[in-house]
Length: 131
Image 1 (tube, rainbow, N blue to C red):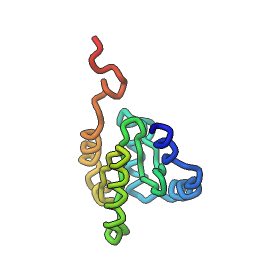
Image 2 (cartoon, rainbow, N blue to C red):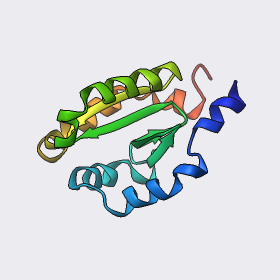
Image 3 (tube, rainbow, N blue to C red):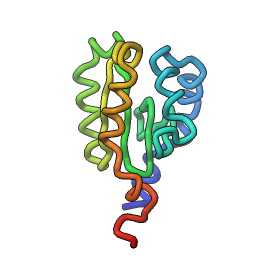
Image 4 (tube, one colour):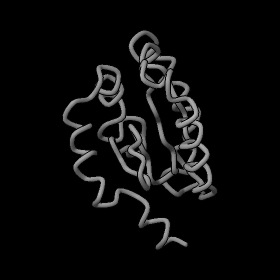
C-alpha cells in the first residue's frame, strides 16, 4: 500500500502545473506560506503539492494534512471540491479549508485552527510516552 500511495503523491506529470502555481501565488497563499514555511508551526508543509491529478495549496506529508485556500473560483466549483475532499479522505488525508478573506483578515484565528489540527509536539517528535 505504501508504494501505491507514494506513487499518487507529487507525480512528475504534474510538475509544470505545480511550478506554475508556485510562481504566481494568491495574496492569501503568500501570506499563509510566511507562517508555514521552514516548519513555522512545528511540522513541515510543502506548497502546491500534487495528490494524483489534484494540486493542493499546502500539504504536510508527516501528518497527512492538506490546507486549501478558497478564493472566488471555488464558488462555482463546490461539487469538484467536494469530490476532491472525498478522494483525499479516502487516502487518509485530512483537508481543512479557509476562505482567502479569513487568511487576510483573521490570520491569527486561522493559525490557531491549523494548530488545533496538528498533533502535540511530543507526537511530532516521536517522543510521546518517553520518560
